[in-house]
Length: 454
Image (tube, rainbow, N blue to C red):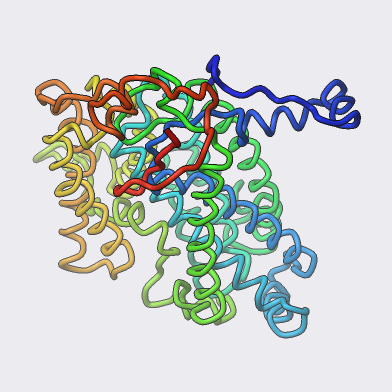
């Protein structure tokens, strides 16, 4: 995003001038996350989760690299090396718990980030590419998390790998050869463990690369905001630093309190006890379940219990297993076309009364139901609930949302971001007289957004 009123980077010393001429890295940082990056003045705390997601990725990379120094990707000793890390490596227990719980917190932050984007329609033009890259990041995260869950080589690790890779066998003709190729054999063993470890180590750096593209795409149109109104004047913005670095710093402090509480006091609360039993191919757990952040998609997978067939002929068109696999992947892939499904000219859910009702009383309860059913046994009433929730999930995005965007009468939008913050007053109509973005002191508005200086 480029505005005429954005402050330009000016090197102050001979060294910074030389560096700016040879390698303008300080200028890049200044314009990306400094005073040279104007941001809408009304961002609330739902906009903190992007920074928190980046921090979570950093935690996972740092702890993962150190853990990899002590881990052996061999089915004979993998479980033992994890115990060695926990018992013998200095602070190994803390690194392992930080990495395991860091994955859960990463997904919590990402889910909040996604739902903020859904409610405020952050996927709409001109920010489609930001959304599409975000979906790519989410898919890469899911693949990375799955492969990481296999590495401890406990019971859930082994049987999770068996079940998830077994999904590919549902693909006609190439399914079984594809599963064998993924595992390096007919069942999870050394070959699969080596492949998953290598890819699990590599993927976070791929994610970091896509995150850079995500941020780059963000800086072209600029950040969205709770009103959905584009920036029109200087008074609509404040510089990212110090206003939002301070706000993000507060959010990071709250996050770290929760994260450290989990690591030090409840380290196994989000894990499964069976994964502390070494993998045994001859002993199938009573209830195979993935990590909690996969539960909604696992519920969609299990919602299909009958084949799609031609009535009265017994001819099966699509087996139930393949239907589940298609629906599970389709539930995420449909996000790629979301910018073109929602045709409403209004972005923010605050100004879309009908959309808001279906969001809070339709989509959110549906996702909660899928989370619960995904972690529950495959029995009644969970199967029926997951089938109903799955049906509504696809209806919401493919049918309800497009219809709402055509028939809904939205509320009147404010003329500008400043008017939405300060009201229809002289202060809201005119840019600040200082001519400098971010001059003076900032306060806080009742809704938690930033109040720039007058």
